Image (cartoon, rainbow, N blue to C red; front, side, top):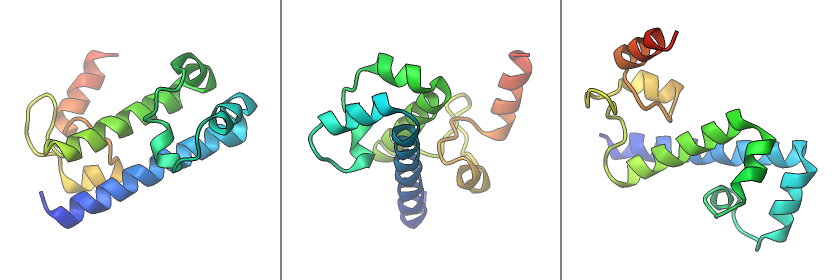
Length: 118
């Protein structure tokens, strides 16, 4: 995959992660207290720390899922697996990754997965 595209996706994922953390901090005094108790760090690094997961889950399971998906996508970038479907191992189209940078599956596999889960 093109290095410029990977850099763009990594920057996008880190920005999404920062946005989610800032949103959680703005909406929750409990999360804000967790942030204040930590050593000063870049917000992008905070979610990767060993924060009490029960506190994060109480703040919003949907946002927690997104944070985990973003972290997983960042890991896939680091290990050279970004952009490959976890089910069929085919390349995920650039358009899909641009729309959903943390996508795990190609459109076909995701559609099949959603049909099966109905």
